[in-house]
Every structure is written in C-alpha cells, then in structure tokens.
Length: 283
Image 1 (spheres, helix red, strand yellow):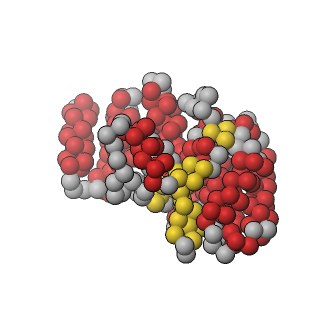
Image 2: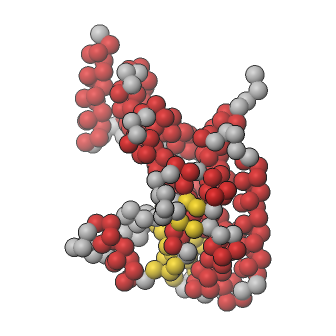
Image 3: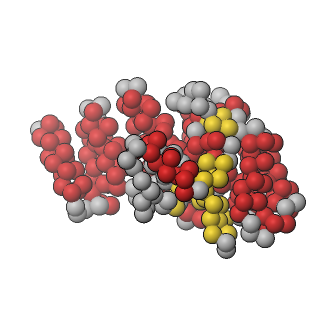
C-alpha cells in the first residue's frame, strides 16, 4: 500500500528525531509538520520557496561586506530586507489564533504567521547566509538572536524584524506579565532547534485543546514525540490525554515511557499515582 503524504512526513520527522540538534534542518522539519495537517497542499512548492529564501539570503549577505564582517545591525537589516521587504512576510495581528499561522506551508502561501513560524524562516535564512542565530524563549513572544564575535542582537520577527534593546524588552515583558514585571536573568535563554520546532507545534496543540479536540491534540503531541522521543513531560502529557479518551493501555504505555526517562522526583510520583488509578480501572 503506497504511503500517504502524512506517512512520508512522519517518517521524515522520525528520522530528524535521531539527529544531533545541530544537524536538524529546522525549516525542512517544520515543512514536514505542516504536511501532516495539510496533505492537500503543494509541499514541493513550499520547499522551493524555502530554497528561494536561502538563495536570496546568500546573495544579500555577499552584497553586504559589513554584515559579513560581523556587524550585527547590518545582519539584521539584511535579513529584514530579504524576509519582510522582498518576500513580504509579517506577523498576523489580525487573525493571530488562526491555525494557519503555525503551519509553515500556509505561512509561506499567506506571508503571515506567528512569531515562532516567522522565526523559523529567519533562522533558515541566517543559516543559509552562514551567520549565527538561535531562537529565544522570551515569555509570550518568541524572538530571534543574531550572533557574531561582537555579541548578539535580539529581533522581533513578528513586527518587521525590529531590533530590541533593553527598553523595548522591558516594555514587552510588561505587556506579557503586567506593569510590575521587570527584566531578570534567564529571560533570554537560547533555544535548541528541537525546542523551537516543539514551540511551533505547541501552538497547534494548545489551540486544539482549547477547542476541546483532544484526539487532534494527542495526534499533534505524538508527532512532536517523533522529533523529541526523550521528552519525559511530553510522554506524560500524551498519557494524560489518552486517559481522558479512556485509552487505558495507551495511557499506561506513555506513562511507563515517562518514568523510564524520569524515574525520580515530583513528576514521577504524580505519574505513579495516575498509573495506580488506571490499573485499578482495568481490574
């Protein structure tokens, strides 16, 4: 029986899950996640759009000697020109919760997306240019950091690629956490490629949970586990979703895997309590 587009995509994600983080093609994996939810879409056109962005980033980098030499402001301007001015990408502030904003195929078509989806395009372009970059897990608002031997600059990819200094970051944290919030250590944690991709998919999972669609949220979680098979808390989450769907055997299997990965601590204790309850239901 021939493979479906979803089968092909899941196989690609599973393969990516075996790779060291540095070897993950972040935009390519995001494209495979998108194929699962939109199998009717032309994913090859999406892949070609990513290749075009990469070529444009390379040409722009070569044309800016200051950026190539490590000037971070010039790097930010160069990538912003490619992604926002030339390609036309921007944040979707009008329909923020639209699931299309977290689907890279739809983002490439619509030129609109969530911060993390746009950030993946920035990371893709920066890598093509040969420039250092990583995602930043800022509360409530994904950012991108461009890096060089001169330090780093933080970019708000949702608002046209604007660089953010301390005043802008303070304003942003207050918008998320309230007027009393202030900048503090640990707010600018660098994210691995895996964690950026999980944050992208988490947007889909949470929206499905809010809509009460637990089977679809579980399917999203299971696909995330293909990329991060050693993520204990996500196995716990999959177990609890299976519990809510009365899939007792599947729930116990997921919770067993969680305990294999994290056998001690408060989470493990809570997982064992859930397992005990589930086993009683089987008797």
